[in-house]
Length: 180
Ligand code: HEM
Image (cartoon, rainbow, N blue to C red):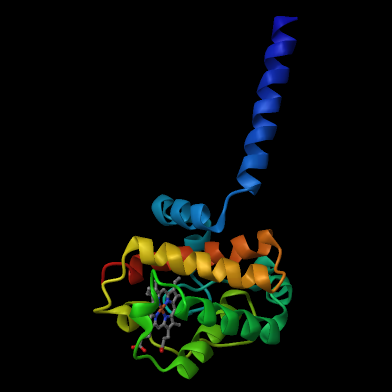
């Protein structure tokens, strides 16, 4: 009897854990992946080069479906537009974006998100190391930007699961971006 109760308690705890995992915020996910080495995302880096340093194979991973789940290129453009509006109003990070070419930034970000989600695009911007060099970006600023992206997706009615997927693919880039 006590064994049955123990098993029941164990299963309930496991179920709670997996529910908890689903409720991870994008920020937690980003932090977790950044600190844990982002195994699966990094493991995918071999075949499609250069979405700014991180690349993702697409044929075998269902990434094309992911691109559609973001609303295709038009959806990604809407997300990036909203994302930059939010970033430019965010007192935690807007000072970093004083003298930028926002038309170019929008275009390169959209290309990057398109490629990362398996869409028919090729990122043509600079490497993440090069473009962020000298900005001395902190982990807190990186997290703030991630939250802004999440908010932009939320406002475009992108499901949390899809939000988390994009954030997870961006998370490994933190190494190339923070503290340069
Ligand atoms: C995963 C996170 C990030 C991604 C994917 C990302 C991506 C990009 C891309 C694609 C560009 C344009 C590259 C080009 O023009 O060739 C860019 C530029 C820039 N990023 Fe980021 N970025 C990230 C995080 C951050 C953070 C946290 C900050 C500051 C708080 C930041 C500040 C900037 C600035 C200021 C530029 C413009 C630099 C220039 O034009 O000289 N980025 N980023």
